Length: 479
Image 1: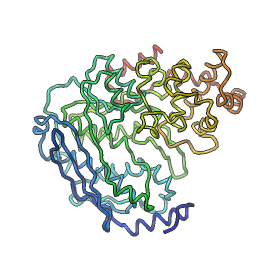
Image 2: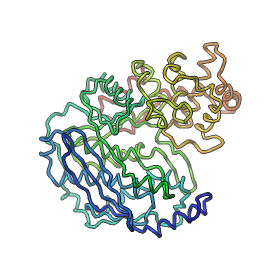
Image 3: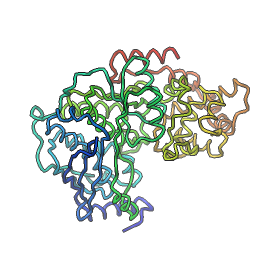
Image 4: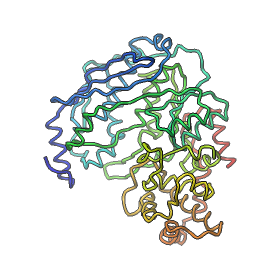
């Protein structure tokens, strides 16, 4: 099989894998109690002969609540957990056909899942140099055609406690701002944690989370073996998995609202290609949220409301709000590379962006306390900032801000350092000399206005309840 060193070799490798493995089968799923919890196991197969059996376990459940859910409705939720889980395994060979034998899908559902694959896995196709224009990527078929919409059996919550929200919680600044907004609004909430890192538990505890709903996701080690053997790997729409998991957990626990912390910055595509956009954060976008809400109400749980609490805001606005909560400075983490060490690697695009976004709003000693070093003194920082701006090379495939707000943040960093009479650290000096100065001389460039517009921005494209929308907007205005 050719080595993927150029587009032609990559395309040949892809075509060879697809010819060798023409079908991916979602064969079945099982659900059983496991101590105080509930364990779902899925059976996937790449034909011929490659089997997977990943698991998702809800550590503790309310048995009375679960027993009140109709069996068919409960199985439908688990079936959907398998549908989103299967993408992590299908991508190994990118089989041209996905056969769903574990449950029923109608034409509307198949279209929704096909779009999720195309748009949510754009990064995967791009990184593996797969030419989507040459052939149909995948055809989804179901062993049984789905029932008409009005006949589908989806759960309606049987609990009558409408006061508690279920909040998907990570260890990052976005979760902090969302939880604090709910706390300040007097809402009671519990936190949903998937394979929780130390920072996620710490943030949930500091925020006064009523209880933590812990879910464990276990990958089949066979997938890692295939990756090592040269099969394909790449990004899958993780926030879509969190969305479906959130709705399932809400039904199991009797919650009415599932709240996430996806921001407006996710709307900007990572890359613009002739054949379309590639967005690392597609499943965090408003387009996905709107479509998923419709899908969930029709095919998952009609009584559950899913929305992002931070949808109207940019990352830079969230960083400014986060700066008001110093009690979280020692606790939060956003670095994906050092998550196992509960640390910041201080060298990845995510670390550099968070540092840049916080710099205008925190004191130097506070930043040093969080990161342990001055990231603008790192020799690779200037190049990293240019990458975040989309200059010289592709914007990083990370959950970072838009190019415009990164530019605004860099401008605010320089202004802060100048205002304090400080010597600019190397990266900021390089940005001022090579980027900001040239923009300042350009007709129509107004960096102060750009920064002000982003820091006061608001969009009505959201699904927030009116009371929470008003509370969030008031915080932006007050700042």
